[in-house]
Image (cartoon, rainbow over all chains, first blue to last red; front, side, top):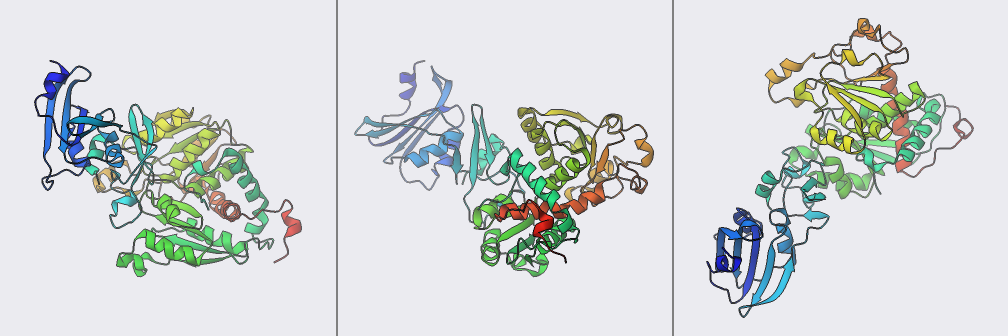
Length: 158
Length: 316
């Protein structure tokens, strides 16, 4: 089944952001990381487990009337580093954005080690994860140095 | 200013220079010579966890060099018990002192304090993380005994999982090209991320549960206490407590120059019969904490240790 065909599962949006090529099963984590919840008022379309030429299967999210910022998108490097992001204006792609995994993720996730100093939520300094390796992705807490279990880490989104 | 949080904060050249300075300061540490290199400077001792040797040796080091010390005192009577964050405590002490020595039960606390502070932080232990000032005195003790740090066979034995002293020491010894043997009960093995880090840096590492068969050609046997306070389950502790009990009788086939070290306090992992053998070095090691910390205080406060300490110093 073609990619084009799978995209027809939801209608084109007039204005907003389309996040395509999200790894299969990660769409809910992406919503979490973008702070999109039941309190969100704009229309959000979510498609999971659709066939993809590039990935086998993939997830897609369309957020209407909201243009996600580069800072918001960079958070997704943890779960969807190769996602394609397009800003849509008047039904056309106005801008393509690339998710950029820098050398450090600041205030995106909390360290998974229970005895890390940052587990005291009243401590005011930012939560910092150093990118030790990109492929495979390996992150370590800047403070305690503990390598992070990525499955657990996704649950620690700030 | 940068402090000492992990051994990665020092190059091998800096480590050797600090050890040289420490050696020069031995008569000052023994109280044979007065050398007030740090007069007018104040050390803040922040020990959020119990400490005897580390706290006292920092205090002694500062005072032997003419400096002064302020203490956090008992955590139970400080503002920490009222819920003060580490960040706020550091802001306050940062204003009172020129340098801070800190021990904290949470891992990463030393880096966190350094990121919150203007003055250098000396990490005196953060949870099961690092203890680099202990490593400096350990390296000093090894170099004192063997005249070098490179190419030695060093056995680290006991609690390698929670023992922060062995975490920092194994990193440093790998950098100097030592062969390392990790001897521990299975549940107290060196954390896998540390082993993989060491191997990535070319570490020559053997992991075993059998300490005794590895001792014959060792240059250093570094014993550690199985730390009861790190176990949440007492049954688990009981299973491994007393896994190693080194007795003088176990030392008949070891090298003449082999030294036995221990960060202390010991429980029963080194029998008192070992104390009077030529191999025992743990009490000298504890004393060396003073010189190593003197040299570190000078380094981080930007004070040069004079080449001729005897000439620069005066009688007490």
